[in-house]
Length: 259
Image (tube, rainbow, N blue to C red):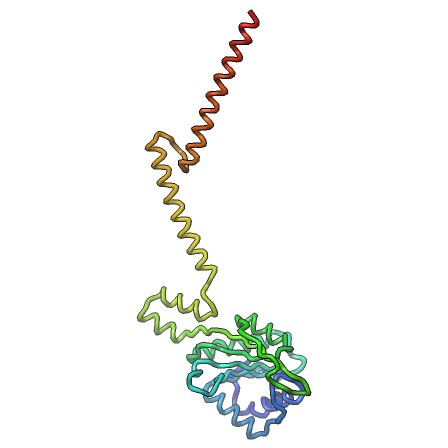
């Protein structure tokens, strides 16, 4: 895998035209001209957003990220595309390309990466979910191609912007970097928050137990965790004393009968 170069224009165009002609991954029926392919690649080369995969010197796949919507309000959001030629799927190449796109888009300053996938393309949906994307919606019958209505599965992933982390770190410190990093990985680290909450609860419980022990010692009861336990012990002791008196009385009665 490597960054795309100007000489890859025709190879990438051939892959895109094959997808247009034989699949529902691209929702158009118009094949790309050489000029179309060259213009597309020039845009991606300018923002360093396209990559190719080669096998024996032949381009067998490509991937790129691009602006998600043209309006400036969406300028921090991008979308990805990953395509491999027939016979080269299922070898981890798509996952490697997607990881590279995520890192590159994040370093460029993008905040969110979107993936709009035709619903029957479950392989692509799974690829994105394994890369940390989450399902955010399904658009029903919004497209039509090959005489059928098509649904779109929308997935998204918040990006870890390393450049922004370094800037924030200079002003807010290492702890703020960790917090922002967790947010940009797609969600707040629930497990870590849960562990912190558990630790706080444990500390609180320890403090309560310590107060109970001190209180118990003040009342002459050692090694007791709670007053409730102390009360149960006292009841048990009184019950034991009662049983002891009954046993002594029984022994006396038996002695009298023996005489």
